[in-house]
Amino acid sequence: MLLQALLPGVPPIEPLLLLVAALVLDAVVGDMRSLPGLRHPVVLIGAAVGWFDRRLNREYRSERDRARRGVLMVVLIVAATAAAGLLVTWIAWTTAYGWAIELVLVAWLLAQRSLFNHVRAVRQALATEGLSAGRQAVSHIVGRDVRLLDEHGVARAAIESSAENFNDGVVAPTFWYLLLGLPGLLIYKAVNTMDSMVGYRTPRFRAFGMAAARLDDGMNLVPARLAGLYLCLAAAFVPHARPAAALGVMVRDARKHRSPNAGWPEAAAAGALGLALAGPRRYADTVIDDPWIGDGRSRATPRDIDRALYLYAVACLVSLLVVGAVAAARLGLQ
Image 1 (cartoon, rainbow, N blue to C red):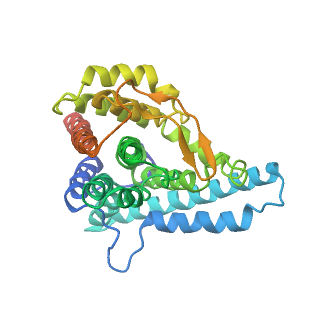
Image 2 (cartoon, rainbow, N blue to C red; image 1 turned 45 degrees about the vertical axis):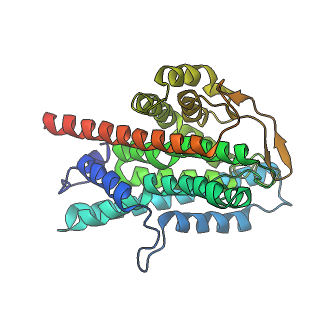
């Protein structure tokens, strides 16, 4: 881990073992948004992004000026989160039980169980309460307009979210923690949050959010491809999934996606489950006529959500095993 070359002292617990423990803690305990007296770091970052957006992204300013101000927002938020990460790491390395603070914070910033629960809620809503409830449930995890989605569209949206957010909520945070420790993880979450709030190609955000969107693309370049490979590996252990098709569709169709990164895990999931994902969709008043990814059924069902959750859970286990193997290799070299 590069962070150990930057900070004095020796961590009381090997950081990679702490990451393994955090992954297990997140999987078992789940989303810890309600820690007493504390606001989730992503909520704080989101509040900062909203503050900068209201004050710097005024409609009367030129596109060039708004783009510069967007760069300023990114620099300030990244610097603040990096400083916070370094401070917590220093506390963790220099106090008796400081490592426990880092453990809880890392687990807090992962989203394995949270994403699983949100996608499962869509399946349960469709099965027990009908289409309207399914639309409401899926609106919490996708940005598209859900008002006109039929049951198949709701199911596809949930499955796509499970694949794309496997990278955003599990693989990429893990990757950046492996590389740069807690500061790297916090920087990634900050950039990902900025992109999710202002990284749109709309008149309001096209210029202001450009820096956040491009940085998010760069930070996800390697993790997204790893996420796709993990899903391909996971497919080998999921009943009726197709690992060879997952790899083939990923290689063939990943670049069809409008995002340079989201297509990799989505294409792997489409191939593994025998589905066609992405395709035309609506965001507010805009219809996006994207190509289909995968050559299977586009009429996804609640049963397919169950299969996607199975694939996602096994892929999370694959991610954990990879981190464990890296930790074991590092300890073996010491």
